[in-house]
Length: 281
Image (cartoon, rainbow, N blue to C red; front, side):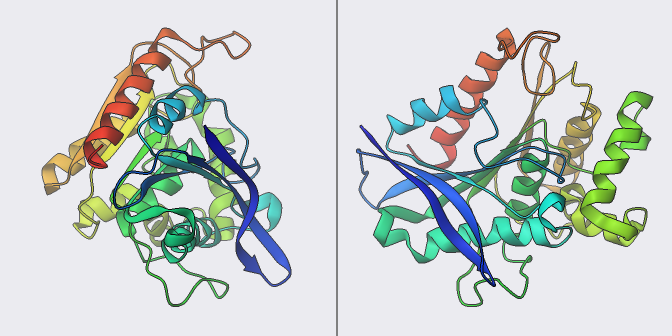
């Protein structure tokens, strides 16, 4: 039995509420339930907190282990948000659940971030920078601290033109421009928004990270996950990659109407195994 709490306002920006949904399993481990916070896709320019089917199978497996699950919205470009708004909102979702851990029966030291595509980028960015991102609507008292992060098809850097598939470039450059605005070609602005840049500088938090990506992904170049894992190994970080032999950007059979590729079930198992390890289940 799982309790579903919809449209929780985890942050107010003036009169505007930023919302999340929360699933609380009946099982409550000693010390409180671990929590996985998910951020949706949408290229930093659109999307909603219920905007995915990727989580359905593996989150059920985690519910049976007593893990709570939240899907958090954030202010992307369609809602007037560009850097640093999306990561500030994502970090405030963490701060909200840390501050209200007792009310929800959550263990504040066992919070893991995850996301798909742009949401995966946010999970990596906030996970590796921890308390860096705030805005003037942010909780000024509570710390953003998480124990792990993983991303499905999440870009670890924003330099799409560096990869050898031209079809990635025009649309994704538009998305990067949506995130960074007029500074989208500014190297310093890009570096502030790239998870990989913090790793390469040695300024990232030492948390376990998992990047899952299909080699047939036509939205985010799979080489990004390889470069990210390589940079992590060089700098002594625990950054793991899982490259899947089939599946599109959403781990579906390419050209199908949302039918999971066989690799999607491999990804499900890897996610459950990763969560079991890092959350001490």
